[in-house]
Image (cartoon, rainbow, N blue to C red; front, side):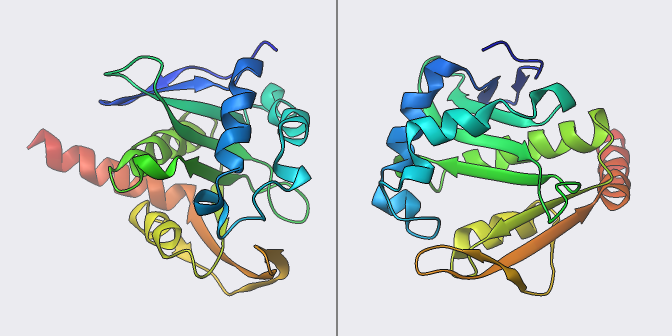
Length: 191
């Protein structure tokens, strides 16, 4: 399936728009009980190849979608994915989504890829804000959200996440705040 999403890169990573050939990798990622511990039961139909395919490309025309993340050092080494997807009750506040193979945890890949996609969403697409919805007991995901500059909001009691379902932890990043921090950081680097 063709994609209107750009290929993005960082110092260590290439973020390539998801393709149909990536779906088997995503399905394997979603079948790992360690990866899915705070998300959904491993092997659930909603995380299988067909369900992932059905939602992977539906918002590409408006600039939202998923990027498969690969190491630049080993060109075809799949690390995980990051995405901008419709979120909230009306779908108007895009959410940042990320998931990485357990063997790649703790290496900074999720932060590096997510930071690049946040910059793309706010600076390039002009999104006014982004959200993250995660399991409140997923400490690594909560730390990543905060490291990216997202602020924890009140518990999202209307949105259940995980198995067994619990109220999700919501984080929000205002685009104007992100731009202010980015400009300040650029000014510090120029000195």
